[in-house]
Image (cartoon, rainbow, N blue to C red; front, side, top):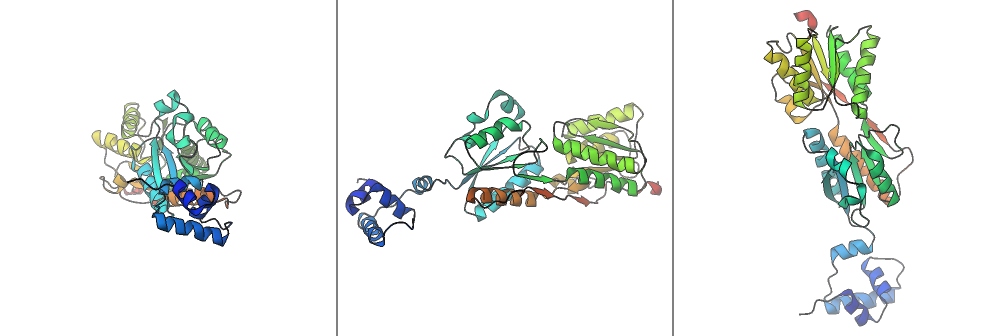
Length: 337
């Protein structure tokens, strides 16, 4: 049996392809008499337009791309879930693309499915290390985009960020308020703006208290790096009474290193993390940390991107969200010892 196409509707109605397409896409510019002719032809032929074809005819795919550097922590996972939920509520589908640093170095933005014309209506870019090639390509192809956790400051784009400076300051102030004066910091690579801002918040709080850090270490965002940093402090006899770790994985590594050396957490060493990843409330001791509002990050990223697509976004619409101190069991007062 022959499949009925839009050309059959054109022939049956006696109208042009342009007119038939306008009717299929509910255009208000079609005469009512012509609309009825097309609708009658569709009914008689039992024509069922392909949804994908109709989306392309409208210049919309209802597909939103999201790029991120990895799926190795629950910070990204929670943002992706939030983005997906809010897109579904607005009738959009999420397409996910993971870019490793190696891929970013060996390929260019043109190779990504998400950067091809007519593939997606817009893109959410999370934590890009090398932003310029990707963002320039998106601009060139006029694909709307929003950047979450950008690494270039300032960035000439709509962004959704957390105030990492405030989070670093608040984490350190918490330790200071507990009576600690010998405090160390371990954070991620300073390629990341977020890592630089957390360290800056830490150093400002220490400076405001008239104190000098026992040690400052910049490394990678993972458990092993936190473990190695704390072991190095212990070997060099630079043992603090408290540590601000600029990421929960680092904090877990620091905790394991001190416990491995016989130190009790928090009785002898208090530790604060950053992110409030899922595991933070299940490890022992439960981790005091700075919570990033991951649900809000995803919500605002979707809202701004859909406003861009609809042409209703306002200038200066970028969002800066406040983090929150979550006090659990990994910190205690220095005076209790």
